[in-house]
Structure formats: C-alpha cells, structure tokens
Length: 142
Image (cartoon, rainbow, N blue to C red; front, top):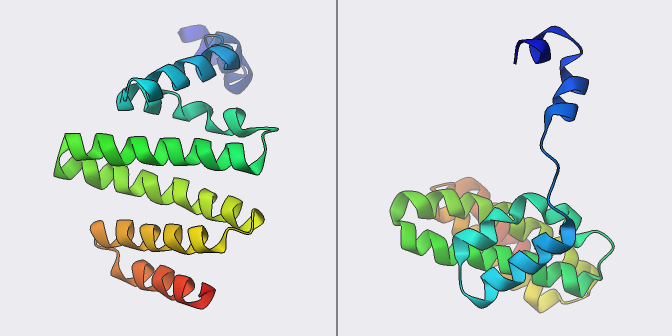
C-alpha cells in the first residue's frame, strides 16, 4: 500500500511478496499436469523453470524444456491463431535454451531439428529475416 511506496520500495516489495510454493510441490504439480495433459497447468509452473532445472543433468533439463515447449505447442493449438502466435514466441525462447543443452549432450541431429523448429516458429510470427538465419545455422550444423 502507501507504506510500500514511501520507503525503500525494492526491499519492502520483497518483504510483501507472498512466499513461493516449495519446489517439490511445483515438481509434483508439473508431473501431475503432464500426465493429465493439462497444458495450462503445466504452463503455470513455467515461472519456476530455472529452479526446476538447477542442479539437474543435461538430460533432465532437456526433458523439462521439451515438456514446456510441448505444452505451449499443444495449448496454442487449442487457443487459435492469436494464442498460437504468443505461444510461438515462448517456444522460440525455450527452444534456444534446448539447443544449448542438446549441444552439450552432443546430440547434433536433434539440435539441428530443434534449430529448424525455431525457424518455423519465427516464420509463423512473420519474422522472415531471423528464420532465414536459423535455417542457415541448421544447414551449417549438417
């Protein structure tokens, strides 16, 4: 309220924020939503993505990124054109991270496929210049 606006806003804001849900509960919700194909439920967990991946193997990180990408893809299909456009941009961000993980895992074929997926998503949102760049990256990869 008014007190938050008067004193040390950034520090006070942190004190006013509700506590975060324990990470294990988020993991359990994520798994339950994935099993139930509850895509909006999966996406509610996306805000904790970095924490979900922290300290995990590259394989586990890749699976987590793939789960969120799939949720955006499948839920975007249900939302229609505008929702698909918003989800396409979210997919690009996730897939860029997934490309890095796949490179560390030396899964270059999968990496190339994901690079093409990024290019397709960029085409979907009419970003032809960046899509061409991503297709060229895939071509260089082999």
